[in-house]
Image (tube, rainbow, N blue to C red; front, side):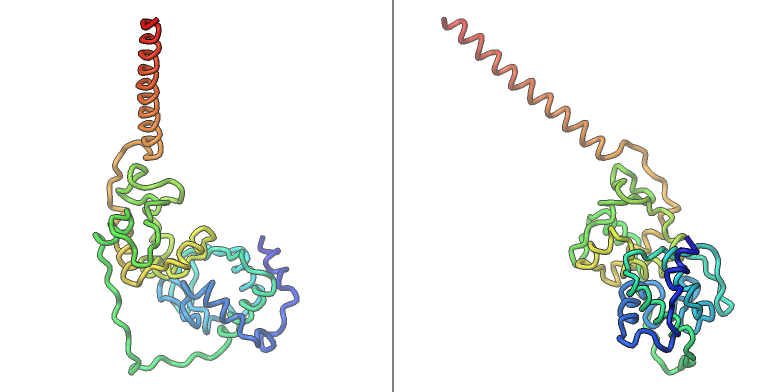
Length: 263
């Protein structure tokens, strides 16, 4: 797989000659910026920066990571990272070329020192109780997105209250690098099943923070035991069907007997 990813960009042009159209920046914004942030500045301790990152100046390395993903610890500028980078397989060869060109370009560019005068936005604090209600669907998302429990379980939300269509999210924050990583991932999810759903129904920043706060508590929750809700629904439906058939059969039998007696 690694060789395939490197071979895909064997004819990579020099960085200076790439992506004059700006397509790479647009593709980066739609596929990578949810985690690595606009301009590739990253999230400290969660997702590594790409801007000014010497590891990302190698086109073959960048191509391999995009094609195959990456797991395991990584250190950039003395900061350790251990989140998961999923493979991005929905790009054409030309699009991948453009993204690689953009990433290697910002990785090799000199970065300006941050100014102390630049305002820093106050972090949005999530509420785990609101997040629990959003997860279950007791409160709907502002833009009409589906409840998380429509596809997932997490913590105390077992199959009786959630669904087994998607993976269990009890420990998802550990995989994505904490609440900030989850919020960044959900802001533009790369998963093929989720992207078309939340593209038209994005979560607000407060909703993301609330769901993240709930998921931060799910590893400490006890899961209620019980049958899968789909199995329970099937059993109830079968009982109702049998009961209905028995009722109508009884009625038909009585009608037939009455007809015999009338003769």
